[in-house]
Length: 170
Image (cartoon, rainbow, N blue to C red; front, top):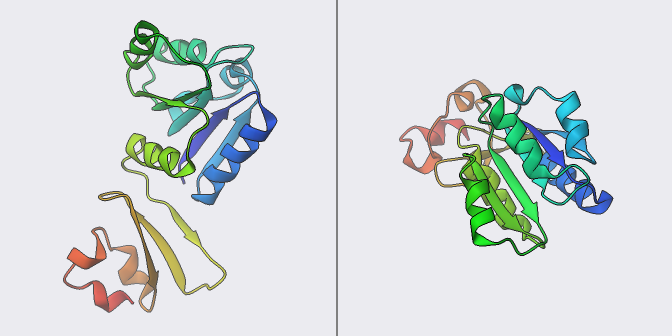
């Protein structure tokens, strides 16, 4: 299960981000300030960081510290401010960073998360235990597959419509 750190000082936005992360089946570690996260988290064991830029301890300071430690965990920086081009370029130059403006569309944030974590597979069961949602990273699509053959479906590693044997699993 992918582990995502959420650093956001606004309670409402932080709660929304945590719900979004958990809805994907990911683990969320939420902090109201970047310094709290820096003190508590091993960023080498994290799959993605979602951070606000404007907090008491700014998100970009946290990212710079993480990069100084040689850790290249992907980061999505969220901001409600208009950033000068030079500052924006300096953030992107940190590597594995994307900047998104607030307010953001959930669909766009989800797509950015998919892009930043290309190897993450999200699996979540719904109320029907025979239905599994596969998040297929090749095209960032979600396919609903009712399962008959659980063992075979676990080995399904391509898009079902391109797998000649996909019909055996549903």
